[in-house]
Every structure is written in structure tokens, then in C-alpha cells.
Image 1 (cartoon, protein in one colour):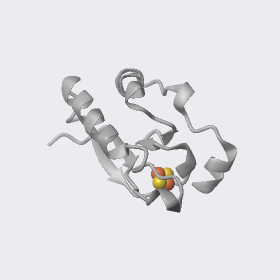
Image 2 (cartoon, protein in one colour):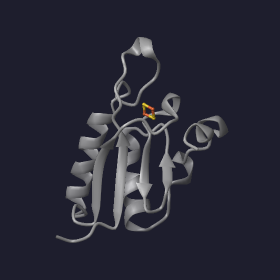
Image 3 (spheres, helix red, strand yellow):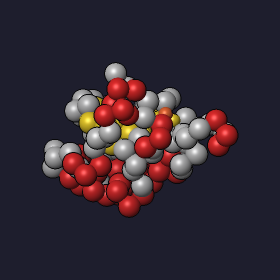
Image 4 (cartoon, protein in one colour):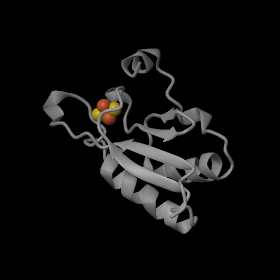
Length: 111
Ligand code: FES
């Protein structure tokens, strides 16, 4: 087994809508499946691992995911953004700036 170069944690926390925003409610499990398919298409499954995670903090701007070891948090990720994350960040090493977590309050929620 090859040691992965990147780990991606996708928040899959699912709360009832009455309990506030959550990435699961915003479709993060489906997003994680789509991301896995993209990794297969790009033959990246040995280099990149995807894991579901509990709450990453900034629930109101989900779907949230984080790419390690780079420590890059992405917010409001949709299916339309996944190709850019794979091709620009994972293949070329350049984070997708327009998706990076920007909100100061949200950043303080994750420390
Ligand atoms: S529910 Fe996803 S960051 Fe909190």
C-alpha cells in the first residue's frame, strides 16, 4: 500500500434542520461519493484518501472539507467545485482560493 500524500476530511455531520445548519443536510455524503469517483477517474486513489468527519466548525458555510497536510479548509463546496479541487489542488498543488474558508467568525469556530 502506498502512503497517501493527501487526506481529505469531508464533514458529514447530519443534524435535523430544526437544529441548525449542517453539512450532511447540505448533501455532503453525496459530495464525498462524487469526489471518490473523481479520484478514481484521475487514478488518485492511492495518493489521496477521503474520510468522513464530524463537525469541522463553520457549519453555516458548509459543505466544508479540509485537505491535509496542507491544512486548507474549503467552504460552500458543491459538486461543481470538485473537479477544480482535484485538478488544481491535488494535481497541481495550488489551493482553490475562491473556495477557501474566509469568514473570520467561522475561522474562530475551528480555533
Ligand atoms: S456540520 Fe459541517 S462543519 Fe459543522
